[in-house]
Length: 350
Ligand SMILES: Cc1cc2nc3c(=O)[nH]c(=O)nc-3n(C[C@H](O)[C@H](O)[C@H](O)COP(=O)(O)O)c2cc1C
Image 1 (cartoon, helix red, strand yellow):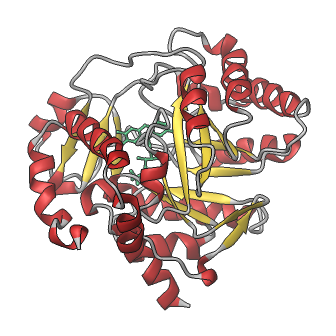
Image 2: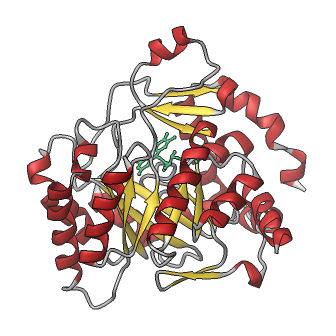
């Protein structure tokens, strides 16, 4: 079969030879092309999907065919949802989407650190804007996968005016996604993480939950946190979550920390700022998921995101209290067959 012949282990050195952002764009374009190749999606689904009724789960009122999703940032503009869904994901999070299109930070802005199984990015939430993304989503209206809409504010909008930005993106995408994630934790937009402070966050959460009341269909709203929050900050966020009826948390985004890396300090200082993702995040993700799940007596759904590089990592996060798990960097390092491997491991664990 096609996918068994072109194994990702052979393809990866080629992709890793190309600059990360170019390799990413090339991948999206190749996925686009599949639309014109008869049976390609059927072949992908046959080889990469792993459907078993015992993997299905219901979380914040939505029925997922399995608990493994693609994290925000890969298909920011909802360009290739159908093609990605053929790779077996139980859900896909698009975005981050801002009300207006923005180009993000100057390039180069994505770096691979293969020694550490890490990516550092300071993309700065480049995206096509809420109207264009809503249009793309309409094209995928007959999709077979649950889609989350990750929303944020434009970089030029001050934190004081942020709530209105989140609201505009929320309204534009409301009819086109199944759940929302409020991204207040991206380290690549100046001061964005400051929106996690209680009073700033209250303004956003209040605006969004009020706006939701005007819609006939209820859409779950989650908050995506930074992995660098202290225990006290997490507890402050949790009190707002319960006060406003937020449906869950995504734990967590990329970190600004650089501890314990094998990559040389010279390379790291050349890259300088940016959010780090991949292997080093895992232990903190497990701790944070476990902490929140314990505090909330597992009553608040958690999507775990951060550091899943093998099948056991995903299982550890589910055992720590996550309802769903997302992958991004692990997907880049392991390739499309990774989802199926994780699902088989979950099934085997009973
Ligand atoms: C290149 C890149 C772009 C990303 N863009 C976004 C984004 O736009 N919004 C967001 O909430 N998270 C974004 N993320 C963070 C991921 O969604 C995920 O939370 C993080 O990478 C940790 O998971 P991982 O270790 O499995 O990669 C991005 C990550 C990467 C590597």
